[in-house]
Image (cartoon, rainbow, N blue to C red; front, side, top):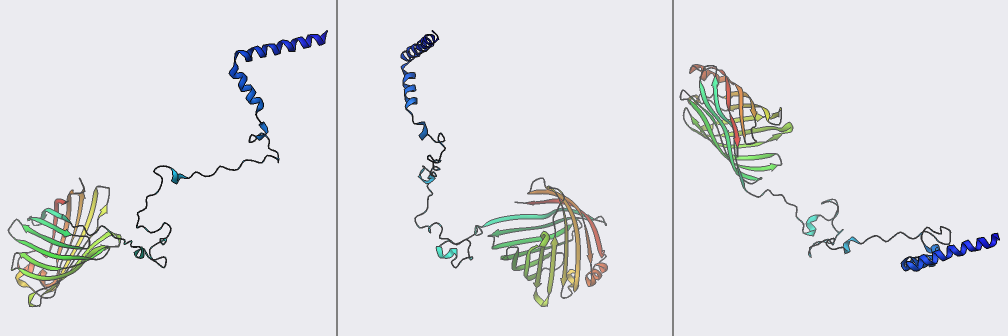
Length: 314
């Protein structure tokens, strides 16, 4: 009796399954396909020695993808044929027709007034002061015009104008050849000039120029300045100037030897890089025969003045 009951239950279950498959032919087909699948051939289903792990897929060829093929000029040297660096190998870049160059042959111009403003000394005299330059040319060769001087409220003045051909002899130094003309109070003087201008270590800007004039006159001038950034806009600039002459020139109040030296301290605020008002103070002293000429004319041997003005360029 129990065996009959067992057979009856299994027959009923089989009838239910057959009825469901007949109602859903898609599921029936899926079950047939799954039953006929060789599970032993699937990766990872039979990790035994007879079925080793599948090989890694081949790398993708990106060059066959649209837009990924590198474009090489028809006359370019073959890839991989260039030396690792110019001069490191037996052949340099020049032998491949590749010539390194810099964009330094485009002409440009620049106008800078480092000082343009007003000064008042301890004797109560006011003066207009300026120190500017204009250059035009390339990075290696340019025409440079310089002007520096002052005009006092009482009518006295002292000024000089210079014109140079400036040639770069190194990345930080220019050789300058040209002429200078002294104007202002006294007779005019003309000079031939040769000098050097550049940047010393620690960004100290230096100008040194030697002069030769008629009647055996000679002179030497030096200027050095340094920009100390207190903030990104507030800049403190000490500037030192000195001049010496080979012979006396009493008509212009100049004696031989070290003639004059000055130190100015300026603090400027850059409203923009091109426009910066400044305030400061300057100390000037005359030496030797130049100081004697000043005393004979009723002038002071040394002078202190306060400064205010603007530095601008474009």
